[in-house]
Length: 198
Image (cartoon, rainbow, N blue to C red; front, top):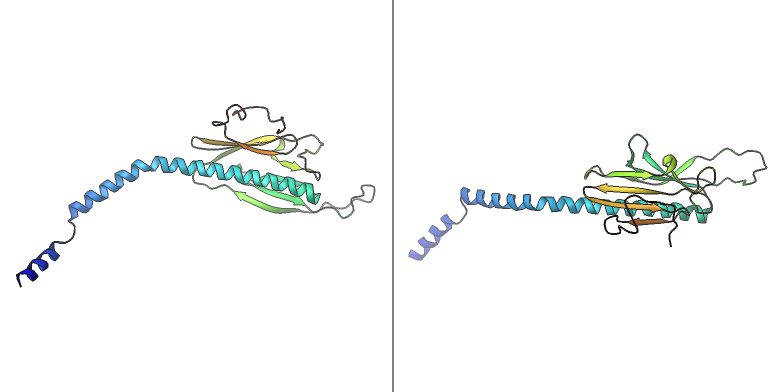
């Protein structure tokens, strides 16, 4: 009987006081605050890497479609008011059924949107694209060309926090991703993009 009373007495005292709970919550809060900067830094790094990969994939898809389907492809800003920070879209035009330029003019077919990538609002991401006319176009042979037939090349820079990636398009339309911090010799923050890839 005495053992039963002791067990019942221990059961009543099992639990935590409000003071113990407050101390545990304070310790967990301090640990979370200490880990927050590294979590945000990692989030920014992964966002920059993901967006650089997505843009490079879009450029590779545009080049392949132009090359193998013999159509004009364009990579344009998703929203002209926001610029490249709002994302980008890959558009094409259906090939003209009569490619003979001596025949009567055929109306230009409408643009078709193939894919679109929007940039997340959090974490804050800055995107700048050093290219003429803010449009990357691929001719039906797979080279990046402007309306006059000249080569079109440029650098898209994506940055968030202390992380930066560059997506470089060479004068023949090839794409390369580089990190200016890790590849300071082959990928400076400013440089000439006209060199073709080796």
